[in-house]
Length: 321
Image 1: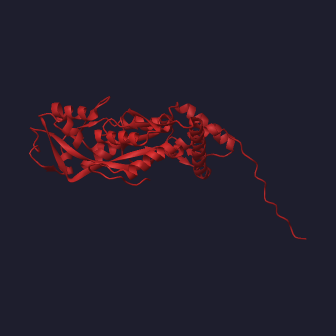
Image 2: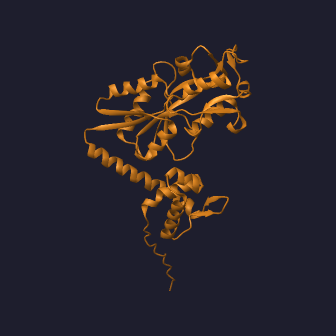
Image 3: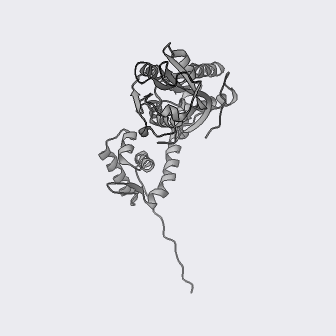
């Protein structure tokens, strides 16, 4: 007689789906403190949630000690499916809301405070072209806007290209702006038509606080100077609304040097300041950003409109990623 080898039967494992966001946050940050801040939870509460999930699954998801947090093999296997489950749940919620809204379509759009007026004009053109969509715009710093996006308080963020920190977003380049060096008229480099990144980095300069949007801050400082922020002499300027105005005034009254979007500088310049192009020129992409798990029909309509409707002057729509 031949031996019959039966495969073990896998029993169903039931666990609290509400614990998945906590697992994903820790898995992406690999740091309980940052994950807790991202989730707006106390760190002990987050640790308890992870412990409860591990107990329910019957596996250890993280190896952790005082210096590091690492995913175990079980954690690495669990992460992609956790993403899928969260995205499916969010899609189901989005579809339910859209079905309930029936003919009423609403798009909540958060726009960074320093996005130029011509980009707002494009939003108005979209609203005029899509009269069946109610477009509601709020202006706020990109860091706060992205937090609102991930919390489900807005549908899309119009802001700046960012390095991929934190929760994943889909993004689409819709325009581009030039960044210039702004100098007080008594600055040693004020007579130059252009300025190298190395020359700009040699002197103290004013910059918005990294608290407002750490990703954008890091990219912009590094792109303009060729150095990491902690290697530079920077005056951090607090601003509740007009960050460009605050930086220009700080340069005018203090260190004598800052960065600005060319259009914003020309609108706010005053007589005490001059601008110099970077050599080579420095451009910053303007992007639409949205959470992939909440990609509704209205979000798709906005992204498609920007792809099909080029800027009136300068810049060009980019690709979605």
